[in-house]
Length: 246
Length: 345
Ligand SMILES: Nc1ncnc2c1ncn2[C@@H]1O[C@H](COP(=O)(O)OP(=O)(O)OP(=O)(O)O)[C@@H](O)[C@H]1O
Ligand SMILES: [Mg+2]
Image (cartoon, rainbow over all chains, first blue to last red; front, side):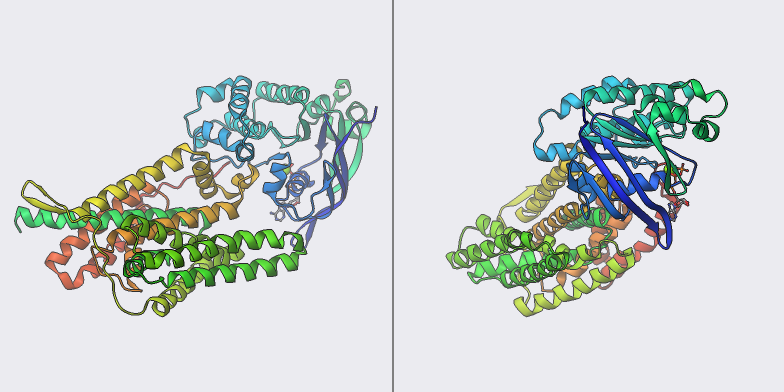
């Protein structure tokens, strides 16, 4: 069965001034799948997501749900169902947890969506810690709670494609597991995910397809289970004993 | 100085303080959302009072022409922008949005002006005339500069101020106006005469500030405006358009300015250029609030009202000197006591 193509990126170039950070990246995300992008520091992973969201200008074609995204503003991309949790999270530090979450549903509110309350309850049941801290300022949350809030705020928009930039950044191993588990559960709710992770083993475990990005170019791609057994990937990203994760 | 003098001076202080408080809130809002130090805020005050005065005389106020000029400028800029970006299809709709409301308002005012309507209706017409100017000014002068530095925006604000004052002179002439009070009632409280107009000022600003507080803390649009002020990138990522937020904040700025003008019209004589000083005093309040805190700004504005009122008693010629000298200790205090919020991570 052919899966529906959700995101298709062809020959994407991004540069910071004169310095090119991505040259000619192509990648696809099918509906209902989790796709992970792994790679060393400075490979251009965050650059890729920011360009897809329209935060950074880029050359090349980005098609989302069959629509060309060239020249489409960040806000319109959000309205079309694209959502980014950036590496810097960009929470509203001086506003409460609940305000942050409500604002996550801003485009839905504008559209007159009546089910925002329900999503809020869903997010609270997913992250009970957020519910306990609903009136606390986002800036006063712990690092892990902030990650949860960032993810929760993104979920409030009920995205079609959720792009996560290192959702486990700086978290304790136990919570990393919890967050990644949550992410893989999201697939069953119909969300497709483009995931960037330093923890390559876990990323390949929960994703269907994977790309290895090195120096601004896709070095390898394949089904996650195959990538996890690829000797080059094992050597560079999984370390000793990485073979068993599939 | 005896008690009754103090009471009378305090009454004045509260009246002007309330107006400055309103203006300082507008300044903070616009600055937070668009990074524009909106020097021309006070022009809406003069336009408000002058427009109402024209309507009282049954003449078509000059603001009608001002509004139409602004709308045409905005329409031309929008046309050029859409032609350059190749999105000609959107042109008719954009033009209708930009030109439609100002034209309708202009026609409405032209029809109603000679009818000598009741004061309430005239105030409504005044608000209708002045309100669209904020968003139009934003569209013409500031939106194209959205990515410019704060300094460039400040320079643009100064330029807009001079243009608006010049146009004010052109359309309203150099004569000052004083509009009739909303009510002639005199309230006597503990031996103190309180004019009906002062009560109107207190009540209106109280209600309006309350409405603003409700808007910013309870409605999602209000929260969205605050979100843009706190974190522009984060706001865009949840789908809030900074352009629309800017338009909304400028609309609130012109409403607040116009309301202030309508409220003080019966208390002081307003000339085409009176707004500037009034706006600057609101600005002192805004600085008191670090251009960020609404309650502190309101408190600061009250303080400005008090120092102005009491210094006009002791050293009347220097009251403005006293008020603006206050900026220096306030800035010093702010720089020593400001809590710097760390951004994310
Ligand atoms: N604002 C910027 N200005 C100039 N160069 C930048 C900027 N942001 C990133 N770069 C450069 O672009 C390259 C890719 O950066 P990017 O942040 O995308 O890497 P990454 O793969 O996300 O790394 P990490 O795993 O450390 O997050 C790096 O060489 C970086 O130095
Ligand atoms: Mg990164």
